[in-house]
Image (cartoon, rainbow, N blue to C red):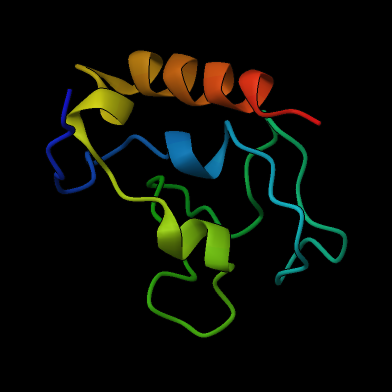
Length: 89
């Protein structure tokens, strides 16, 4: 099954909450644990590091897709949380 790339959903922020990030970034010197909102997530649930060199490679590589985003924010968080659990060392 192929996944169709899509634009980020306004007011979602699931990809800035659900996954863990293991590399340092502004606001998270040791990275960020899963299910914790990123310190760089704005109040309107947008990434403040988007397009900046400080943005972690993990974030830059994560591409919004129909499979990942689902129909709403809750589905996106559930999918990303399941992926987090499945790839936990």
